[in-house]
Amino acid sequence: MKHLLSIEDLSYEEALSILDTAHEMARVSDGPVKKLPTLRGRTIVNLFLEDSTRTRISFEAAAKRLSADVINFAAKGSSVSKGESLKDTAQTLQAMGTDAVIIRHSASGSAHWLAHSPWMNGSVINAGDGTHEHPTQALLDAFTIRKHLCGGAGDLGGMNVGIVGDVLHSRVARSNVLLLSKLGANVVLIAPPTLLPVGVESWPATVSYDFNREIPKLDALMMLRVQQERMNDYFFPTSREYAQYFGLNRDRLTLLKQNSIIMHPGPMNRGLEITAECADSARSVIVEQVKNGVSVRMAVLYLLLAGSSEIASTVNAEVNA
Ligand code: NCD
Image 1: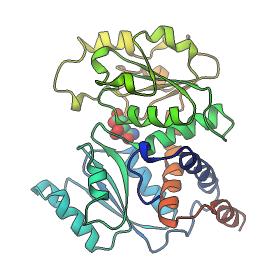
Image 2 (image 1 turned 60 degrees about the vertical axis):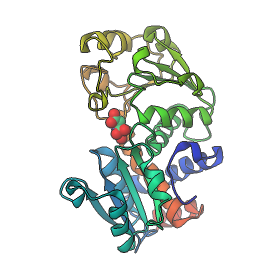
Image 3 (image 1 turned 180 degrees about the vertical axis):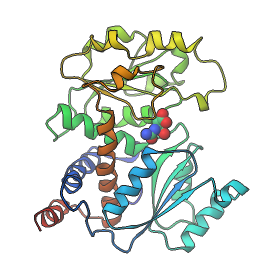
């Protein structure tokens, strides 16, 4: 594997191997020294041309824990805001001897474009391209579900996962549907018809418009952010009505099965898709998702750049040293 551009490109075995490697990486993060020498001397560029908090910091922490040199590059403050093209930016990064570029961009397909452009020799990791995909978010979500509900090993066979809300604009939903179904989970998309993409019938998921009816069946409930910045039209009458039909609130919390978990990729619109009470409840694993993101991204960087699956022995040597 040279690049991680979409979940579509990953085989079942590759997906599981990333989760297993992340499991080992979590042991490093939980240990006293939090750092492996594996990527010493490698240069990784965080090319974030769209806003991000969690994903950008998480990739930076992951790269640093593997001892790589990290260059953070944001649109604001760079020549991109002067209109410099992605091609010229890529050539500049290449000239600096970059081993990997982590790219977030508002255009769907931008990560593919960069990976296959003649100006880029290094690995490319998609950290969110438009409304297309966000593979590492799906991997950290699968990791979190597996840890809580599947004993931390194997696939997600038989798990029922509900993904609720603005599916139309969500690269997180798209990547999750592909990955969770690949790993054996049953996925149901719960949204108003206006927030479902054309062609959703062909996705490996079922669709429901009735949130209350689905909740009691779910093992994991993943709420999506209403992506106002991508909405150039009216998709629902009022915020109040949206919250009433598709928001997670105290009443709906009581419909959940006993061990099920509440997830959200962040950032949250508290009071719109999820109330503060639910976001901060004992069922919520939202903060833990962020923590798991670092382990999963360490795993991805490790597998792409160090290119070996002997992680267990490396980690053991470090943790036991
Ligand atoms: C998501 C994203 O940017 O796609 N956030 C994230 O990466 N944690 C989801 C969102 O913005 O709603």
